[in-house]
Length: 304
Image (cartoon, rainbow, N blue to C red):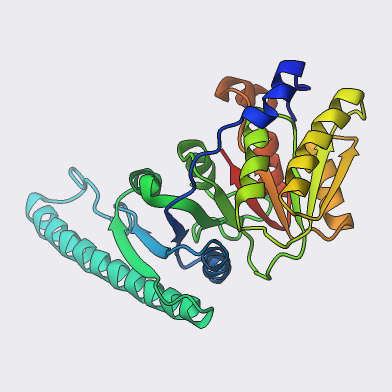
């Protein structure tokens, strides 16, 4: 968690400017075990926020590509014939991957329609996933992704190969779904007094996303007067917005303490800020955000 907030920082709580939250719920659909939960969470979120749902499948430009440079290992004639056959095979595989993606999108559309979403759209794109999401960021209100994609879905205790890059690249809320979905009954905000989370508290208070759901605002660290003042300001924002709020300061390392609190209090969804320190410092000290994504067994809403 970040360093204690200064008096100047505390007084800035009421001066925080909250950007207008517009755009679509964008959900990344693939063939991983997280796909159904992504659809369910995206449908639930779009319904709560009364906004359009867009289902996206990105066909990686490298998928299905197997052609290699065979010079020197084959005779010239054989090489020419084989390279032509490989090119034709790659083209067939690309078409199959495209059709597979279309079928996944069709299944996803049916699933969200069963959840009551009638105006969803589906899109298939070619290229790098992160680049595509950056391109679509201006029209995105919140992104929903699985914790891991199909290429790393069995790597328990790790995060997907694209996930960290997505969190660093985008400046919109990112909902990271686990393998199963149930409407959250309790939400925990991991609060640290940082600028990101001061703004995050105001966003949470103003958004219909968590309206009517009890919230826990939790700080990790020493129970000091400064920490109590920070926590009180945060819980006041939520209380004045009509939320049922529980505030807590707990000791320990952030990733371990927050995970233990979540299990003890039966929290269904955690909200936290993303990568509050410089990239160089993270390489040396690690990141609480990454540690929480790896450790937690519930879905996470990551704010930028």
